Amino acid sequence: MVGEGVLHECLLHPEVEKVLVVNRKTCGVEHPKLTEILCPDFFDLTVIEGRLSGYNACFFCLGISSVGVSKDVYSHITYDLTMNFAETLVKQNKEMTFIYVSGAGTDSSEKGNSNWARVKGKTENDLKKLPFKNAFAFRPGFMLPTKGLKHAKGYYSFFKFLYPILLLIIPSFVSTLKEVGIAMINLAIDGYEKPVIEVKDINVLSKKIV
Image (cartoon, rainbow, N blue to C red; front, side, top):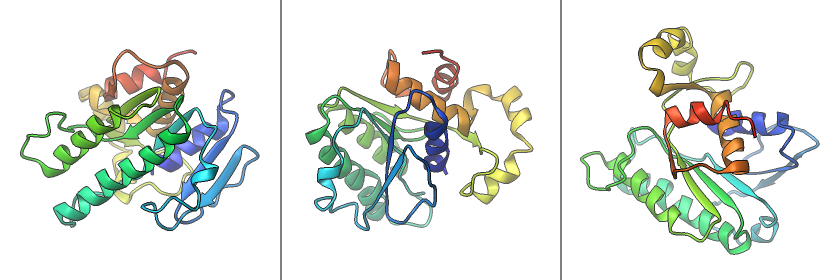
């Protein structure tokens, strides 16, 4: 859902010159700015590695829920896959800004009781050690889906009716998917004063005029 929403905003944004989407199956979107590469195995990028250079930013939106999967599987997808992709990119794009979609409640200490939060925290921490120009961790909370897009989870569609109430009660935990996408673009263009981007920062960045 996040990847589709961010792609939508990138294709609309006048400062985005071109977009490369790396997917396991086609996103089904056609646009003059868009190039798509299909890669069935994200743990083996050798066949596409030569086509990943020349980009200013990576918006890494891949991930799985920890519900119903073992700790090993969750860590393999969340940590190992992300680091493999990032390490491949940084070899060819030292001036790249890498933006990793993490989640609200991530544990930067890597010592808490929640396995998913520790794994996300380790991923964030180790991405910052890579020699990118910048590396940021995006920690969205509840996101209101963008109307007309295909991949919103069913419960997100239900919660859209609660969004105005949540915005009043817990504004620091809610944003729109449109705001998330615009915030990522603005962050890639102009940077930010801290590497961990919480919901309140997302909402600030989405309104920033670059």
